Length: 232
Image (cartoon, rainbow, N blue to C red; front, side, top):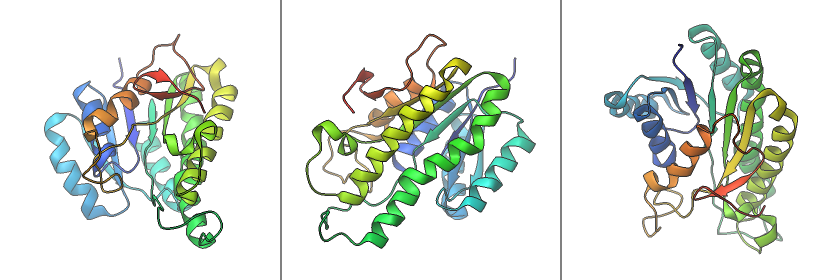
């Protein structure tokens, strides 16, 4: 039986690092990624004691970078079982919708939303070939429309768009045993969440890892926190 392969975007620190670590501990081979090679190689050296880890530079906001990692995966492994779209930027507490710097918002959307879309388009064909795949989009309660207020406009709108992408991809792929779900990890102690946050990166990663390992009769097109469905 071939070893299952997982790719985690933005896995050199924080929640992404915890996801990679958790999947390694469960026996998956993991492709860790980071925008800067030096950061990624440092993370890889820390992750190696947990299992079979590989590293490739990846900037999800850059189409050429996405193409490069797609080519790498095809050549080195020939398949991909799990894609975790974790890379995210810019919790923009300093602006609101009325005064937002739209160039900054565009940059946020390009990473948080379009980056996940690029990655999905790159790797879904590999998943279709084997009639299996799990895609987990790391979202946020800040992107839940039913509970949305003001503030963090670039981040919140990018995560709302990511949630819609999750729904659409899931609807298109469920007949092919490719499940797509979104997960809110909660308020996590990371560079973005701050040290006052209530959850460790490992706790934040738990439901993401769970969603990555769903059985063939599992849910798709849902939004989870703590392994429970929450409102979009």
